[in-house]
Image 1 (spheres, rainbow, N blue to C red):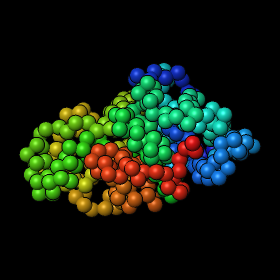
Image 2 (image 1 turned 120 degrees about the vertical axis):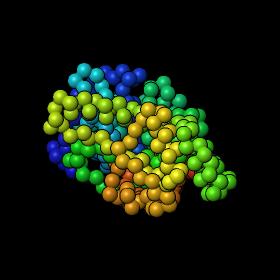
Image 3 (image 1 turned 120 degrees about the horizontal axis):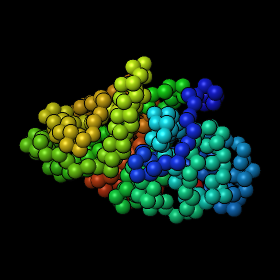
Image 4 (image 1 turned 90 degrees about the horizontal axis):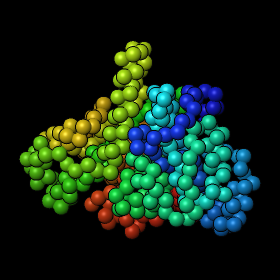
Amino acid sequence: MSPRKQEPPYPQPRRPDLDTCLVVGVSSSALFDLTESDAYFREHGEDAYRDYQDERLDAPLRQGVAFPFIAGLLRLNDLDAEAAVVEVIVLSKNDASTGLRVMRSIQHYGLPITRAVFTQGQAPYGYIQALGMSLFLSGDPDDVANALAAGFPAGHVLPSTAAYDATDPKLRIAFDFDGVLADDESERTYKTKGLARYQKAEAGRRDQALAPGPLQRFLADLNRIQDLEAARVAHDPSYTPRVRIALVTARNAPAHERAVNSLREWGVRVNDAFFLGGVDKARVLRVFKPHLFFDDQRVHLDEALAEVAGVHIPYGLANAQARPASRPRRGEAGETQ
Ligand SMILES: [Mg+2]
């Protein structure tokens, strides 16, 4: 972890308009490393856990997997002097008492996050839509699966050993296409009818946009921030845009055309596009080095997690059979109740 003074400064938080800015919900398990806290909770129970956290109120939690992404996102608030560009809200099923250490840790790192929702043991995803979030990040796979099943945009932040330079002002984000930006219609064809039928169907429907998937709106929100950056460049040619977005998909020609046309039809865009056709995504991800990489298939994430922070979107047919087995495993327990 780098000392605070080396990190670029954050603009002061403003009152956000949740209907116009990018709103991200983050659980304490995604923002901080709760491995120790969680082990204590499981061994000693809720009452002892509260004492444990009270005794450590001023001992900052270690930064978690989503921390570099959240920090980079919040720095973008300097793009608009009047209105908030990004709002990050803690969305946690801790109670407010055990959540005190989380909020103190946020203060310790100087993150301008002041708003929080604590739902004491209840799944918090019902507040995703109410608070205008286009993304909810959590370390709890069940909360994420339930949120997605209810139609809300959510991702499971996976344990990762990836390290990021805290002085890097850039924010890089990589998206898979099918089951993430798009729905799983094509994935269903591939899974149920095989590769040849899939390729034929996709070529035949290349001009037919797919239905948006769970993170399409999040990409649209990021594009609006990129528009602000483009406007800044127009006034200040020395400004270097910070947000960089990549599409990293196993689609290749000719099926790539339907992905390109879907993005166009939805009015969203990416900077880099990788159509890999079965080549390991990790090969390009370690070069692009996204602060978060979103994919609906664990196999693509597992290849990359040593070097890149990954988020599983357990959506669609590819995850239909996996859901009952999605209990937290040791080391990725996430929220503690
Ligand atoms: Mg996919």
